[in-house]
Image (tube, rainbow, N blue to C red; front, side, top):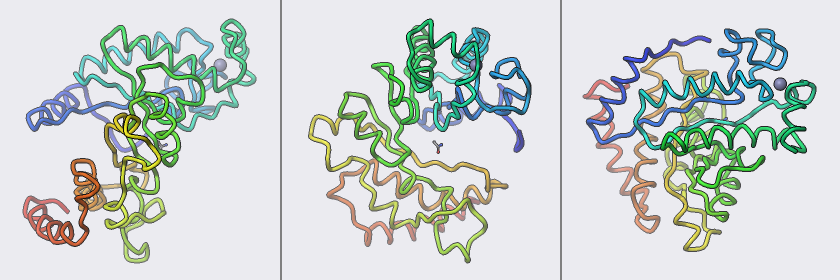
Amino acid sequence: AYGGYYTREDAKELVRYAAERHIIVIPEIEMPGHSAEVLAVYPQLSCSGKPYTSNVFCVGNEETFVFLENVLNEVMDIFPSDYIHIGADEVDKKHWRTCPRCRNRMKENGLTNEDELQGYLVKRIGAFLQTNGKKLIGWDEILDGGVPSDATVMSWRGERGGIAAAQSGHSVIMSPGDYCYIDHYQWIPETQPEAIGDFLPLEKMYFYNPVPEVLNENERKYIIGAQANLWTEYIGTEAYAEYMIYPRLLALAEITWSMQEQRSWDDFKVRVNRAVPLLQQQGYN
Ligand code: ACM
Ligand code: ZN
């Protein structure tokens, strides 16, 4: 792990600062994948039991659930949000295939494949959150293995997961890679600091409609918003983070807070060009 950390007090201060501005901070606590840093320190929670072998929790091990619930208890203590995001994206399930404890868990619960094993974890953590009065958010992979009925789906692998979720009555937050990933270049790469790749200029983001046309009127109600993601593999400084966030976040704000019929790029462009110097005056890069 690199890039620093928040203490409990830092996180509480952030929550307080946001709350004073009517913003709710929703934490994402990744499971069962993207957990290399946890399993370096708690190798007994991986399938092999050895550090640096996997970034995926062993779902067959009861201790995994004790650990995750302890973490979530601390997290709920810090973040008063109604929602907790549990990730569940990009899980390399190969470790589960050969792990005796994971096999056993599957057998005992009548699970026929590894996607359903992930579904077991998602449902069990969802039930835990529910008893604590919280609602679960997960990336669209949670649709692959059976999903708690009150779960909110965050659609990142395009809009497909979000559309399917809305059609089956789940709340959806749209965050498709092509339109909402602000770790992508915002202008011709040769002219920009190094980024992870891809291309999302301001205009493309502005014309994104988070409510897919294929949904009917009732299904559209399940699209509760959109999110931009600034993953920080290539973001070394706060100044660079600000550079990537602005002005694209202004476009996201407008497309989530206004009706599609009101979109006007020409009008937005004028307003953005007024907003940027104001942001710079406040010290943003
Ligand atoms: C994601 O970008 N893996 C959600
Ligand atoms: Zn295992």
